[in-house]
Image (cartoon, rainbow, N blue to C red; front, side, top):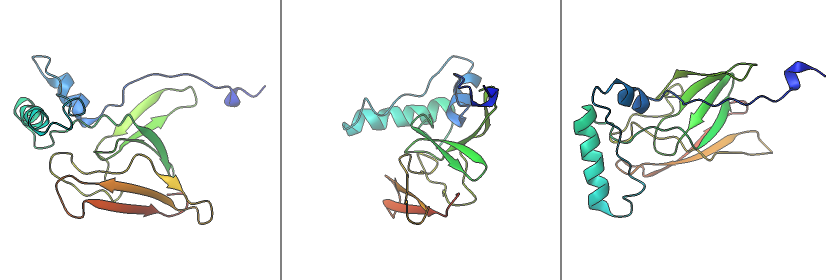
Length: 154
């Protein structure tokens, strides 16, 4: 009956850059989405341009970091396909705290227009080598597809 093995439930928002911008907005503006507008180019482009105007930023895609979680050494990362990850900390009591958003993973995630960069959110671990493999893509810069591999215990 070790208390440390008892599962706990916790629910909170990851304090991403996009969420902070929304909370700081005096008029309650929210980022306009792109998924509902895809694959229709003009509505999606309109939403991205409006995000740039509303939030005075060139990183016009909101970093929701709500797709997956990954552990990187001692770090826990919240991931989304089209943005850099956010680093979070989870306490033994289940409290979640955001350490930082738009994390560059020691330079592995390069800055990019529109999204701020990308890191694949659906990585897999090679059972033979322990390497973690992520496929990332960019809609604006070459290479349009990038395969990232991270060493064992990345």
